[in-house]
Length: 343
Image 1: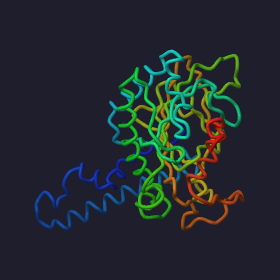
Image 2 (image 1 turned 180 degrees about the vertical axis):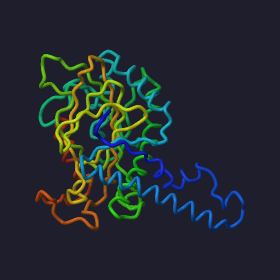
Image 3 (image 1 turned 60 degrees about the vertical axis):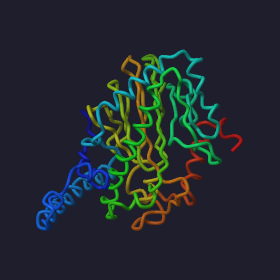
Image 4 (image 1 turned 90 degrees about the vertical axis):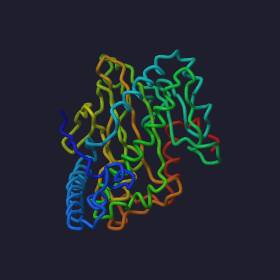
């Protein structure tokens, strides 16, 4: 159990026209006649259901910035495929994993890093991982380009690319709930900030932490950079969230994702929605995998405050101005400084 709320987002999945088509015909479509009363009633009920979900999301975002997402519609076999392929990769010898090291991708910011290769608040993390993003041809922009996939685990490519598409659709739906919770049109983000989103994805492998070293963290205390994170966990747990009531565990709950908002949504709302510190320590004694999916504004998107938000944050910090790409690059260059020395 967790004190973080579990929110069924299934009413939000009808926002996208493709999802509406997949859900089947409306009463008007089925009969071929204008069943206006029935259709209007259905729409009113759907709108009410969305607003109930939006209110729950807004409350969670104002409180801790974390909640669980259920009713998400992600086929259960997709996380299973991803987990199985990820475990096969991390079981490979170190020199084999290094064949897709991040240095080989350069400024595209893709590929494998070893244990201790990523820094949080200047300290090495007790984890290794693979970085992915939207699959694109090589180009001039940093953090864009083709992914690196291991030849020894061919299933990983299809699993990752399928997951990116599925989670992008889910993230758009969750953002529609966030928009409604802020008194905005449900398509506010989808038609603007995230019309062409920046999508980043990681698979992290955490060795068991030493019980004799309480200061060793898989990931140290931090907040996320962007709009929204959707996290798939395996059964081993280890995520902790600093809520207003203190540090709390966020254990894995079956068929859910942990969702949290990031610094950019905190900024866009003038600090009314919280980007909350969190950390990971694998105390299970087992190998732990996690799969964070980051959903952010488009690279060239300007990021002013939302229409209702004050120009300054509640804590007095001035909001960032410029494009999201400039903001993101300034952040990630501190995590992997050697990769960005020439940018």
